[in-house]
Amino acid sequence: MIKPIANYEAYLEAYQKSVDQPEAFWADVASHFQWRKPWDKVLDWNFDEPKISWFEGAQLNITENCLDRHLAEHGNKLALIWEPNDPKERFVRYTYRELHEHVSRFGNVLRKNGIEKGDRVCIYMPMIPELMVAVLACARIGAVHSVVFAGFAAHSVADRINDSGCKMVITADALNRGAKQIPCKAVVDEALAECQTVEKVIVFERVGWPVHMEPGRDFWWHDELKGVSAHCEPAVMEAEDMLFILYTSGSTGKPKGVVHTCGGYMVYTAYTFANVFQVKPNDVYWCTADVGWITGHSYLVYGPLLNGATTLMFEGVPTYPDPGRFWQVCDKHAVTIFYTAPTAIRSLMAAGEDHVLSYSLDKLRVLGSVGEPINEEAWHWYHIHVGKERCPLTDTWWQTETGGIMIAALAGVSPLKPGHAGYPLPGVQPVLLDQEGKEIEGNDREGYLAIKFPWPSMIRTTYGDHERCRLNYFDTYKGYYFTGDGARRDEQGMYRIIGRVDDVINVSGHRFGTAEIENAINQNEHVAESAVVGYPHDIKGQGIYAFVVCREKEFDPVNLKGEITETVVAQIGKIAKPDKIQIVSGLPKTRSGKIMRRILRKVAEGDISNLGDTSTLLDPLVVDEIVEGKL
Ligand code: PRX
Image (cartoon, rainbow, N blue to C red; front, top):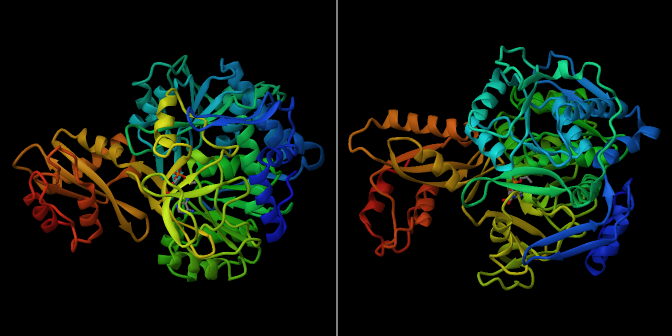
């Protein structure tokens, strides 16, 4: 098992070694795992193609490392605590032995239904233990999981299924979310009308909703488990075999399938989990992220299990039945490490301290933040009222593409500074680049954040389109992985992430490309064209502001806005609902037809004092109209 770095000097030493001798450094970390066959070469790489290969020649199965290897000594330790949406419903606890058995049985269900190594399986499920079981069962038999967040609408689910040619979908009848119940199976049915590759659908009954079951295609989870053996031989995987695909939004086109592979992902997520959270054997660790996002993959499922930790999974939302729910769960299960997103903190902060004060948070030892910049006010509130000023609060910067945490304090080991992710983890070599792609030396400087050396869990490709991966991440600045973020290095060399510098917006920690939302809006028959920008939002971090040009001269603005919202919800899901829609007669464009987003961003941000030179626009008057109609 990985022993966390104990003090700051040891961190500096580990960091130096990871830069001077990266292969020796990672070989040493990797030696803490169970491999079926050792590697021939630790690292082979170039950022031109790009080609990144870690632990080439090695063989493993990640679930043997997550589960089997803990059984002898820790089989009766809790692997999973599951807390339901409704506080009155019974919670569920699985020991490592029980989780191993569930995963093995379900692995056999997958095999029985024709799933083989390398097949892609779409998982569209609520936050229930079976979601974790489904993910691990895929990994057990070498199938590639593609978890799709259960808030996405049918069309988005279909796009993702089609892009990776999934053979199976695993879903549930419906899900509980606060006071609401939301269909899952019906969404899958609608999606499958657009898909050709799916042969079978396995449905877990969570809510008891009536669902349509297509004969020969759809099967109940509980029926399939009948008489299935609890022994499931793990598939032997090459280190660079695909482990999973996770779709994420970029600045252009449709969401892309980020590919992570078995060996490097395992080593890096386990290492970073142990070190960032400074995990101890008796910790109860709770990451509030949904498994539909990378945080749920790396730090709810894989990272904790690889370390033999107890991980808590929560089905509900922070505000149901009231805004004390998170703290009640911490109290109830004696949570020691708590990892959440700034948007949740901001919304609970708005509900007042009383909810926090009603519960005992004595056991809490470490706090974490992820997904977006945490503003100082939220940082202090979290640190003071939740952490009682005694829990280190680590702000963790990373991305779907990085697989694991890149820049963050090791809790209680590294210095903390509100609003700053801090220093890079061992193995991570960040740089700031200027417009020309030249490295900016020294501290107290700002630039584009890039990484100049590979780390084990970095993106390998975008599924089915390697060139897209190259263009997106490795082409803007030759020789670097470009993150799409801007950052500042302060006087002490600590990093502060400023935010995206591309056309990606981060709404409550969810990533959307502006083009993706525009494409959805443009599906509405009344819309001629649209432009979407982000603007600062008190709770969500960024809100979605859409400027829309209507086809018709006469229209009812209220109806039209309602229809546009419905279109976006139907195309992407409620999570992408625009916060503001301004109907305009035209968009500010250059003479060559390019939309001047800079101007729209300023209007959306309410900063109209300096819109820059608008005289070169095709129709400068349109700007006056937009400013006047600002929402
Ligand atoms: O802009 C950064 C922001 O979220 C982006 C990555 O989004 P996603 O792939 O969905 O992964 C989110 C969870 C890892 C980044 O490019 N971001 C993430 N964490 C932070 C952050 N911005 C500031 N501070 C963070 N701690």
